[in-house]
Image (cartoon, rainbow, N blue to C red; front, side, top):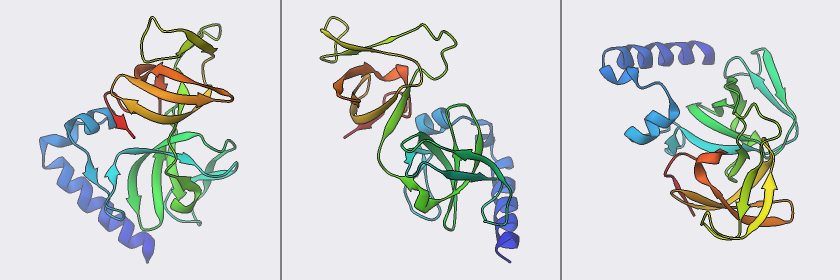
Length: 184
């Protein structure tokens, strides 16, 4: 019966979206810029970034353990974006665009980010600076897909830690924070 309720809720939500021009806003970044909505279960903003709590997280095709596992994440701390809520399940998207459902208990509110995961140039490195300034001293050079712990973001720069290094990186070089988002 849970699945029937989910299908009905999904059908009603789709009908409501299609009756409004707002359904054209398809990306999470656009939704964020237009003003996020409150999650139907938690009341927290949707979409929002969180991270994986465990080294092994099953990504399911639907919001129940009866649904097929389509992928298994094997990296604790990986940033993911919550795009929907249903009971104890959250629909998430990873940096590569893979989407599916996970139990909320497998997610953490700890903010993390990936350094330029979209880069095709594996030789590219991104500067981690001592201060939020292009002219500041260089702390380290980070390769694509390096996992960073986000300490704070002020809208254009984020303070992060990577291994034993701490510094600032331009916010537009990270997947796991929204453009102009402020993180405390």
